[in-house]
Length: 191
Image (cartoon, rainbow, N blue to C red; front, side, top):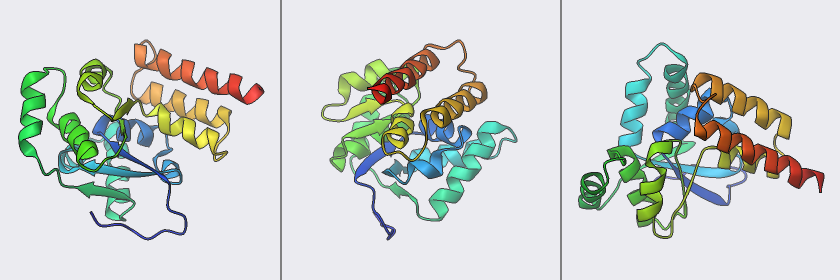
């Protein structure tokens, strides 16, 4: 893995999957998240982002921005060493796709304890097989921005609303969970 030198290297390292990166891009906070977290992605996620970037919609624009960030070296693309483990996950769990499997194996191989994904459907299966890797929604990185005082709770809510609208989460369980997370941050902030 090639590292880019920065003034302040974030302490937290996470592996991201396509859905989470697109969400953060749609929310307009992906670049800001790099101030608190170093993000690694597997090659499959990079490939998926390139495919999505061909679309002329909000997801395509978010993918284009993410690819620009990758090209600048601010998100690292890393190779998964144990390809056979990917096949085991994909064939053993119908709700885990290749990108998510590669992301999880990449995290495990590099002792990275956090994987972010917004594929709500795959969360239960990913959590079953994650071992020491914590599985979080993209809201995790949004919350870190609030906790590090890089954005306000109101700005986080605005980003969540942009994500919800752009990703059509309004009536989805993932939106309710993310909204609850922001509400808990508000309560924490009041104390």
